[in-house]
Image (cartoon, rainbow, N blue to C red):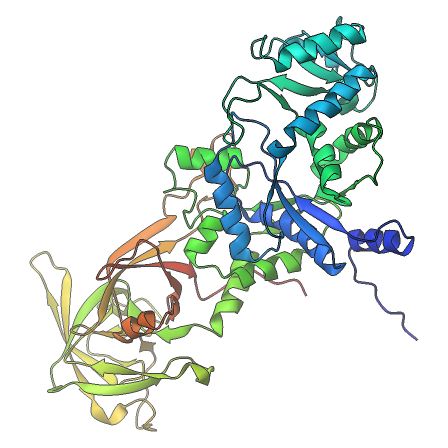
Length: 552
């Protein structure tokens, strides 16, 4: 008999084992973003792992802002992160936590380390500290201030808190081991002086804890059982554990477990590089649909269900992995194809006059190719219609199956039309086609007397709905060079069509609350927040065809 396959992630197995051993009654995980930028798809990869582990074991998930650096953080980013987390549906309880709320406790714990001889005040400059620290091949050297007395360190640390020193003049360092092969244990800085107003605590503090010191204590205060983080923090785990084990803590200690870092091809997710793209105006803002930020994905029209399908496909890798970003497009397309109304639209309109049509014909078409629950719509077939300019050629290439001079093509859900005359302006540009239609060839009539090679979309020129279309392509023409981002940019990453047209039924569907549509033969489009009444803007979410091959 074949054995059952255990498809649980390694993290799930660890937590299950600890629960079976009676180590935990309740599981608490957390996500601790620094509010110095907007969330991106890589951030949500980490959120989803911690959130899903808490939910699988009936536990609790905390959202905690790591806001202990007043130089970088702002309430704008706090609000943005909360908005994104809420939109995605992550449950973090009644309210988020803030690291800055623990400032007094963090200071008292630091004072305990000083009083027990485990921390000292150091006067070395940042450059000197780096030199003294050594390298992977050379052990570090003790600071000349390492042997200060406990009494002197207490006085100096209190003076730091009182604001008696300038930025960088002194730091508080943990006293661990300057010869440790793990550089993070070579007397790391745990407090520094920053004279700057904090967005929540104002000017109350002028000393702020370092992340590696504050993070384990904040986890402990909140009762976090499992601190899940990417494996870039694996070398910091001994310091995480050192802090917890040197504070005489009475309750159970949290455990750090690492998962594989996610790398994505074709995009940058580092906040530093995203900030550069925004600051240098290569994109319109943090919500530019070409960015992998949650704001950008939402504005582009990517459903949150597609984001979770993408994350679930990746799973929880133990080691660093690289994923094709196009995989997200694949799941977006899968999510939209069954729920989006299908309408006709033309991006680059070319006028066609049906010379033998004397009055408007009201046609009917289904709103979806297979999902009948989306109903049907009326399509006005008028004397003047619009087709896409690329669907006509008076010098067609081989195997061209659309409309040509003297040729016939089927108008989707309508009739065959034949091009009889091409009208040009003074510059030779085609401005109008004079065509005739065959009333016997109506779609669904069973007409089989002759066939045409192609079918094209069209829109009534007099009743069609005008809008602006934004077609987004890859922001980078090649894997981005993070040092020279501008050199990797794709000059064709955005193409705008200011005079696109869609069927008049689009207005009715928008009024009913629908915002995402399939424009036949073009792609899936979502209504942009820039839209106002009488001036609509649509973003292409994804094209109709995918270049991604899903994992079998």
